[in-house]
Image (cartoon, rainbow, N blue to C red):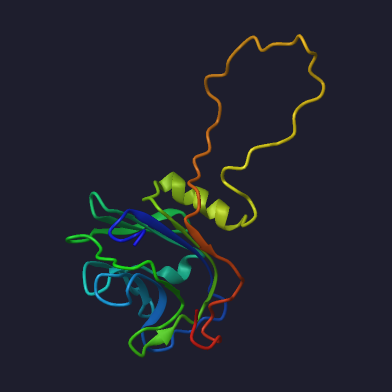
Length: 201
């Protein structure tokens, strides 16, 4: 699969309004085969979470209910797995042996093992084919709020006031570059994956 054992990043925008923990583990996200080795995001209520490898190394403590934007980055070279909350570093682990993702199946807000769908509202998810830097995570936050904005968009309008003989006298050496990676996949639709929808995704 495209993401099997490869570096990638996930960012999710969440509305926590009115959320009350169901009493059983709530599933925010799963990438992969829906079994051991996949990447999953679980909320156990309060500060108890399971973010990382299914039946493997995971981040176990962070108050994600404070996060409108959640992101994780995974570097397949170092096996470093980092959690970000609202663009700020939250926690990290090194996943022993790396993730063992064997499919590109994505589940959002949908429970496994007879547990609970996520009780909040997942507004949008973006997945990237690289381990984003901290700056890249901030850029992804901007993208997730601008679903119609392409990161590679360039202006098509040409100036009409320049004279035919005018030539530039200086070449800029600090021209800005677009630090935003291209989207690998995305899913849109406000509140599409709330637990009030049968079966989640």
